[in-house]
Structures are given as C-alpha cells and as structure tokens.
Length: 133
Image 1 (tube, rainbow, N blue to C red):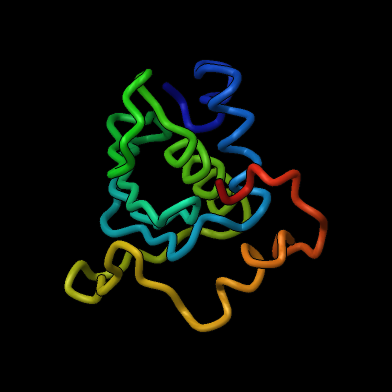
Image 2: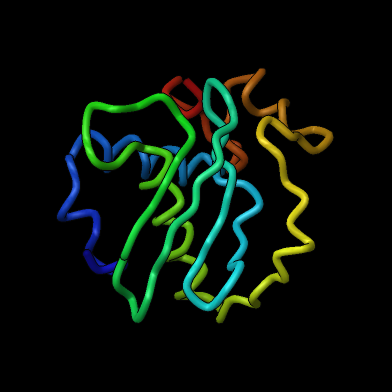
C-alpha cells in the first residue's frame, strides 16, 4: 500500500473517521524514529499509541494499541497516515533518537483537554462529535 494512495485502499468508513481525527488535530507527538519507523499518539475516547513502518513510500506494517479488531486497519492508524502524508509534503522529517522518546500511553500536555471538553477542533471549528469518541 502506498502512503500517497492508501485512502483509496482502506475501508471507506475507517478512512472517513481517520481523516476526521487528523483534521481535528487528534494526532499528537508524530515522530520519525528511524528512516522507516514513525510513531504517534492519537487522542480519542482514550489515547492510543500507533507505530507505522514506511519504506520508499510503501506502507509495510502498522500497529495500534486500541481494541479495534474488525478489520486490518483502525481509524487511529489512518489518522497517523494522513499526518505522515502531510508532514512529508511540507518538510522532510527529522529522525528522532529512540532514547529521547518519552511518550507514554495516556500522557497529556497541559491544555490538550480543552478542545475535547468543549467540542472544538484545534482549528476552532465545531466538531461533529466523532473527533474524540
């Protein structure tokens, strides 16, 4: 599966929900850990950790610690793929040193709960309610 066309190859519902999570800024702490490995957190009803392996624009593997098991890819992975796609378009990523990765499941920064609590995306538009649930 190619990073530039993955949205055409996954379940339309997963694609739609993943894109909404991405647009609502639910993808946090996106990091390129190595030349092929990416890592991020996705905030939803809980915060989930997502890892993706991409080599020469080909999505090789992915994992998410959410409980979804009704298909090969969850909305959290789709959201991270959209974020990787955007970051790759705007600027080359800087590879992070794995020892510096201190992110833990459910870790939050101050103020992040505001948008979820008040039903707004970080872009200040009203969410449909599926952004964080």
